[in-house]
Amino acid sequence: MRLAIACDHAGLDLKRTLMAAFPDETWQDLGTFESDAVDYPDFAVAVAEAIRRGEADLGVLVCGTGAGMAMAANKVPGIRAAVAHDTFTARLAREHNAANVLALG
Image (cartoon, rainbow, N blue to C red):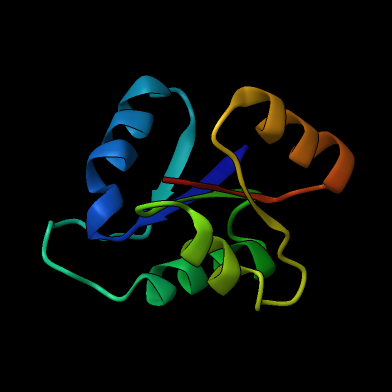
């Protein structure tokens, strides 16, 4: 499974933690790479477009709440980004709503 991941400055630590926690996954890290302030929609769209083009199977977006990233990603055709703050919501979003992007905060 190819996973695209990106974050804004508020999500950098969590993004790094996720990638380290799952080292066997094939991560495509689309940024950001530093804690300087960035525009989150740029990174949300980068992950969404990677999925749309078939370069990634699923995506993970990380920002302060996950909400802004999900809204930006959902503007890309074929993307179904869901915000989840617990495993129950994440699992149901994938199983029942065919979410292909998980947005965290």
